[in-house]
Length: 303
Image 1 (tube, rainbow, N blue to C red):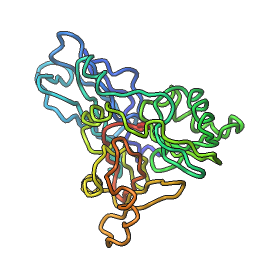
Image 2 (tube, rainbow, N blue to C red):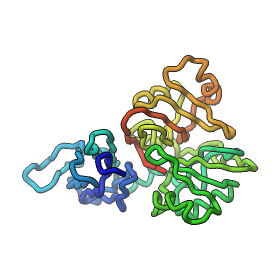
Image 3 (cartoon, rainbow, N blue to C red):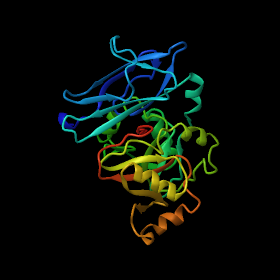
Image 4 (spheres, one colour):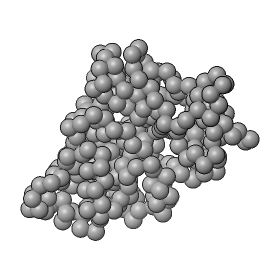
């Protein structure tokens, strides 16, 4: 990546708050506040020089070293990084809570959520190593997986030589985080969604998202998760984030929703989701503007 457009952080630490090992590609983290901690020092260092780093909360003690943040009534700490040429922006967010709250706000599950059709499908991975991912994919008759990262697809082809999948392994060196949206390819036979009836914990999970989608929206295409709701709610959510079009995969085919288009253009999408979209619904979003980070990475990737 050219230095001038690099809007990543090299490091992020919050004293007295555990966010795990920092990953520059992950823009959403859970922070667990240690017992008795009422104030944290936020330290954020950018990858490149001449990059602007802005923390959304005021310094509670200007005489002390570092940016001191009082934690009373603070639900999240946000760090906005703007590239040297001002063309890109990346937002890192740490959501705060006690250990019990942090555990309740995240769901884990085995393998994939979502139906896998012959052709292409969108699924959500529960998280784990790439070896676990491959085992999961084989059990669902999947031959290739793709993550969308900074507007470009990064693929993993099952059974291919190692160099073919090197970029995917570099993207996820420590495994894939929970709730990573992926596009997958299968020659069949199709397999049904094991969570077809939904999960009661979904409502708890999405209620903790700061925004209506999870994942970073960049210029071009991004794979994100929607909190769920009617098509009208989705349109309002997407419009607020600078999204111009959305794409769902149904039975191996893309179904589009173009914001601002005549009603007949989006008729098929509305018919597909006549009863609304379920929580944690994966969608491809298209945007012509600068990146907007929301809850999660990646993804978070995945998540």
